[in-house]
Image (cartoon, rainbow, N blue to C red; front, side):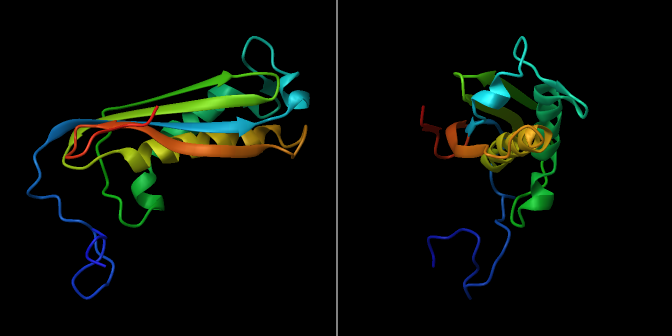
Length: 158
């Protein structure tokens, strides 16, 4: 159990103490891949689909950024963070699939991996919600951390 930073000496949950860590610039980039299917992709015009609920990708970007900011409210052991930036990009990869990239930056004592992963997921869930009236066969096929920098262990998983 000692390998898990979110457990105390009795094995009970705890929030990690970051008070002794140095403030550094920290970034994380997460990617989510999503199968929309040809039927939904065919409705897009110039990389956007406008529905009665609004523009799909623009709304998903805003929702993803909101998800980044609210990560600590959703995931119990995440620290509330003052986010310096959150940038989400969505692109159509082929006739059936899209990709969402979420990059988050802070100057702080803890990383933003969970915020980047949450932002990418929330963007995909918003796309699902906005397109489900066309077809409900969409699948979020993969979500992964691509890169993190600024902490004690950097990662590049591209």
